Image (cartoon, rainbow, N blue to C red; front, side, top):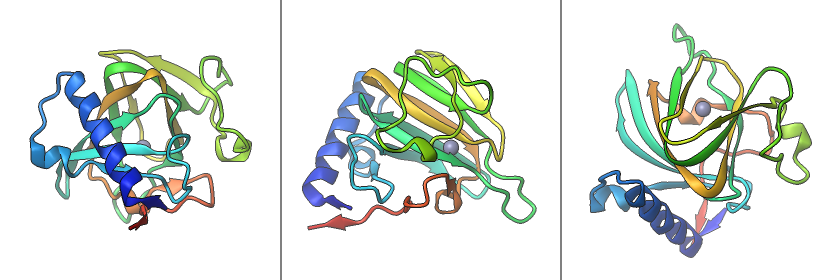
Length: 180
Ligand code: ZN
């Protein structure tokens, strides 16, 4: 749950970071950056700002902004019927992304949000700077964290059905509630 004021402040802050990364977005797009607190009500620690550039029933392209210290909770993209699940390529434009995937625990630069040890189970750390990219196969658990100054990245994927994403933290609710 976020207040309208918090939601709009995060939207504006994300739009500034997108433009500072030299990505052109229209005023209309800047005004529909989605602020996700994942139902956890601690946006500064766990959350994300997402601008969908295109989403059809085959592909999606988004810009994801994480503020410094913000973590996008661990999740995976499940199979849906005949679709093996979303395949997602992340490409960093500005800042450093800490990306965590299955494998040996190499977590050094980043940190698990306080009190959330059980909600972050994959600990292999990939550090991606501008121009760095990685592809996440369907069903692969992953979580993201911004380095100093925050991070701006693209997400290119097959069809996105965010509402069906599975999160390790049972308290996550994908739809953000805004209170006036
Ligand atoms: Zn994902």
